[in-house]
Image 1 (cartoon, rainbow, N blue to C red):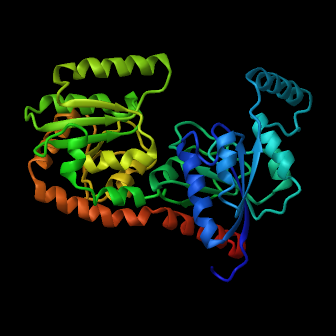
Image 2: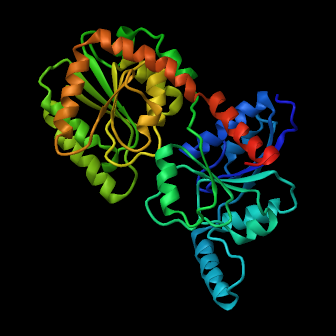
Image 3: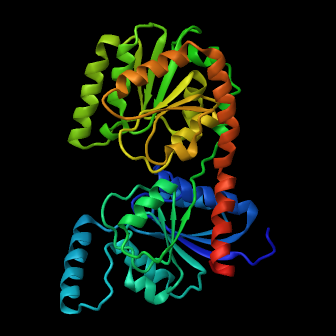
Amino acid sequence: MTGKRPLRVCLISPGELPVPATKGGAIETLIMSLVKCNETEHRMKLTVASVTDDEAENLAARYPGTEFRYFKRSAQIVELVYHYWQAIWKRLFPSSHIMSSLFYHKVLESIRGEKYDAVVFEGGESYGFKAYDKVFHGRLWYHVHANPTDFTNSAFFGNVMVLSGFVLNNWRKLCSDKQQNLFVLHNGVDISSFEQSAQVSSTKAKQAFGYSPDDVVVMYCGRISQEKGVRELVQSVLLITDPHIKLMVIGKPDSFDYSQRYWAQLKGMAEPAKSRITFAGYVPNNQLGRYYAAADIQVVPSQWEEGAGNVCIEGMAAAKPIIASNCGGIPEYVDEECAILINRGEDYVSNLADAIEQLAHDSSRRYSMGEHGRKRARLFSEKQYYHQYVDLMEKVVHNGV
């Protein structure tokens, strides 16, 4: 405790997935990091607005320090009618306060009588809402969870948190309100299970997945999509002739047709080396430790501008050396003592293959990089994230900026 009164804070989820994060979701998981830490630290009086879900509501009972407010999802036809009605209403009354989502409308009606110090939109629509500003003027925050790529009408948010300095610079270029207070708040994750995986016998963990003790297992963990660079990683492994260098791909594509075609292409590419390349599919977060224990190297081959490097934090906590693309916010999360950064370009695949092969054949370097990463990961723990989040809000709410 800091001696100051707890802040009254309302966190508004994007309204797509429930909180607690029973259906996954990076933003929902970060919200739960705040909820969990607040149960013991008590620096905020928290309210969380979420779409309803039976499993999430049952789990929420374990966190009495947070008030969860749940709102039913509207049927798609209802949302369409709502948007149509809003468009007509705005045309008839140009100064009226419309919102892009029925979920946000329901949340506002629920909280409008509350005296919050801060109302934080955790992701979701980012152009601001006149209706919310009318009720909570000067107390609206937006938390940017992705790298912006288009013009953003950011009116009404006086304070904006971003997940890396890279994203801050892009937001500043693309947002409409240049007078906003911008703050870098690096992400944090629950590193405990990944730290525990570093204590597991590598030999036993490998045997559980059918690998031999002599195999060097390269791991990818994340969404299977073109921008994540999985194709480039597979191509790199195919260039390597050492039969003991194996690739384990964890994750799945989404349900879109183009994602499924990409998935099929990957499997076709890997077919000639199916004894060395394994697709594990989706693995729940609470089971990832087993896979990290079996891995020797983690690769993050992103081909777009990653806003942050959450998966790098996991790998560092598990004491794995990292090979990652030199892009976006990733360099802010790793450093040269725990990671090899590969510049994107026409030589990317061959350079990635070289880096994998060199690290695979240097066990002492892998160990020293992993140990440094394990220590560095503590900078991005849930508790660090929580205290930095609340420190920032206290600075603004109690002292101004």
